[in-house]
Length: 429
Ligand code: FAD
Ligand code: SF4
Picture 1 (cartoon, rainbow, N blue to C red):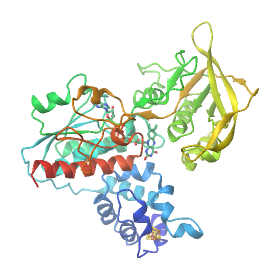
Picture 2 (picture 1 turned 90 degrees about the horizontal axis):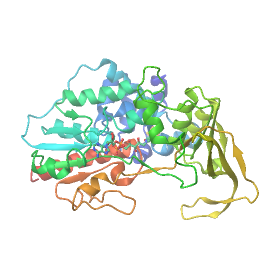
Picture 3 (picture 1 turned 90 degrees about the vertical axis):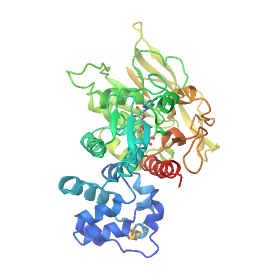
Picture 4 (picture 1 turned 135 degrees about the vertical axis):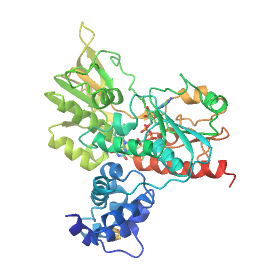
């Protein structure tokens, strides 16, 4: 299938697909190698621009990036670039025997805070250049959202583990259960531990809530907490020490990819009904179309143009329903999407015993509040210059910690750029 699909590429001279890729992978070049049966060659082409191809081949929103620009898509189906990338990466992981070449150790020490795609990429690129790199991760497993957020059925955790193992083979040290800002500060890493540069890739894991009555009841989760308990800590298993509520009916509030993941995980935990409750219409939903289709195929019910107003609790302090109101769409707001307006007299109670809030996240303020001179913007994102350097000398940052919740490929791209900038700075280039 991969060979047939690769034959569909027209090897366009102006390569619109490449301009759609945030890290500009040489797409026609790798596809040509696939068509020539040179799968390792194809992998090496991708590896020049991307350090996590097996991950990106699975989770990148290709329909708005490379495949969205593919000329084959004008009159029919675009070339399946994402699936070809996934095939090539999986082939490499199953067959490759060539060890990555690293430079001799250069004696410089760099600390990376956070082990999501930004941190993993930055650490890997620096290790290949000969740096002594240590990753400090708050959770007990490395991988960031790739392990605690994105469910196994979309991204097998063995793939992420392989990436972490590859880093360790390059000499990167991974210190888990290390909350920087609590156990150690960036100041201490620099002054007492001798790190000459620090990269902050701490993501955007702080959930937002609606501030409606009842959000503190038992049975109300943020999507991040719910997904962490189920994905990372396997709360669905009988032998898990992490509790999670087993509900009959669940409402997931929000319409993004994270809401789809939470809803599909809730469904897999034996729930009767799972509702997506979203205040705008289906056309305005931010989740990928593919994710919406998968959720519907699995029996998730979409309650669009519906907004919660109160979560109801029983005498035991647990959720026993959610008051909602129907909405209609008015004029476009600042985001360009039509503003949802409540329809008077349309209130109703949804029969649910668990509510998962999936309304977006922002960067956690812990690093900012413990690092003097580190400036952030209004949304909590660390302010960086064109070299990903923050307002603190030799403290670099990238990924969701800078941009707010975004994508794996953008975080990876930022980690790569920061590694190059750290190298230039420490080598006085
Ligand atoms: P993260 O992946 O968030 O990693 C940050 C790491 O830093 C975490 O491990 C965290 O524990 C650690 N950390 C935080 N604070 C500290 C501290 N003080 N000390 C030490 N460590 C700390 N993107 C896509 O492209 N495609 C998708 O399909 C997709 N699906 C998603 C599904 C879910 C459920 C979620 C939540 C996000 C999804 N995203 C998706 C977004 C994508 O995962 C993120 O944009 C990306 O992971 C950001 O990478 P990062 O390295 O900046 O941060
Ligand atoms: Fe191939 Fe599509 Fe890129 Fe053209 S735009 S080179 S057909 S992948």
